[in-house]
Length: 598
Ligand SMILES: [Zn+2]
Image (cartoon, rainbow, N blue to C red):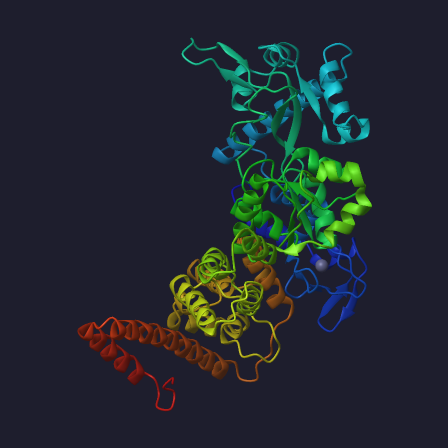
């Protein structure tokens, strides 16, 4: 984390702040064993699953997976940045922060603040122009024609109007608001005329309805301008600036995040107007991608708040294509993806206007898992009356199925496909399964953590054991390279632990959690922290776990070589198959007798 507060002061603030005290100020906690429990402030529930460990100084919700330390709790509750939380707590617990502003990060911070202030002035200017009797008339007429002239809604979003002139923004912000031309250029509000001498600048946004674009914390980071006539492009966005990186934000998320968390569902729409229309009618858990394909960064943002996503894209083919691309990105993040197909010719905006929000919510209940609708669409647009047609359907659907990480879910979709496409031919089914297997062997996607109680999970136990005993932690680090860990979340935790050991830091969950980027890993770590597993013999358990992990890693290697050997045999490459056979023999001999896999 880049900030100008030195680490030792952050540690001081951390050690002087008590998570129990901070959480208690926000919700009622009851003692339960070593921990305290209460109703989670981040999702709605009737029985308490929000757990605070005063000993570990962390919290974890068993309902929604929220978790972290005292900093994270205030960040989430009050929607503050890490830096702001540190400052706030510093004031409370009497730690004095250096105000000598120096260094790169501080220059960056200053620039951010300058750009935010310019954007804010621009927004106020655009909003005023929209209300201007003469100047804003055309824009108001346009909004009225789309049934968007709702003063409250426009004010809530800060919608405005950029006049059609070439230098209106420039002149106003430079002369009246004392913004520098460099600042305006950096903010992307004006452009330098190509080939002209320096200083010949003009407004980027001319004759456009202006949508302020905010980040998840509600900071105004960019604008999007929509034409009211037939000009191109229909939407024009701010360029990338120090505040705004394309594909890292979602329109409306700042306002929707709480509802998304409470309902554990996000509705992903395409356009600004769609999102605003839904919001206007009290459908609050919506965000808009605004014409760009969903990115992994956006999927991660959503994953912080929910695991259930519903794509509602236009029923035209461009919308379908967008849904298809979005599906992959969300899936890679392990999110469940549903899709709602609105009747032909409708988008959420037009649908809600014509049929009302109740009917729209009713439709949402019919949202189908994306895979199902994909299978059905593929079958409907193909011809399954012939074997060739069936094979084509299989070839289109197959790549999609191989991307599903959950094997149970995938088998289920294979079944749906064979049923719907009338693929009762066992040979095709076998081929399908085989392709999925091969794909998995090539890519080996990260596995989900199995949390069933009683299920042997040596990788998880190792993490608990490392936290419990420093000496054992060192032993694990010596004996187990991180690539032996199969579960990607646990592997990340182990990597982090090894790093902390190298840096001479203590292995403590509340310290480690600040460094975890992946939300699912964060959730897992806070859960491990509030729910330590007791071992009667820690040393022996550690040795058992190391052995089990080594053995499984070896088993996997053996399976892989066996597969290669079989392929070589089939291909008639006798020399290669013999080599692989020798390798197999060698690997097997390292296993203890009686452990040779079948
Ligand atoms: Zn919760």
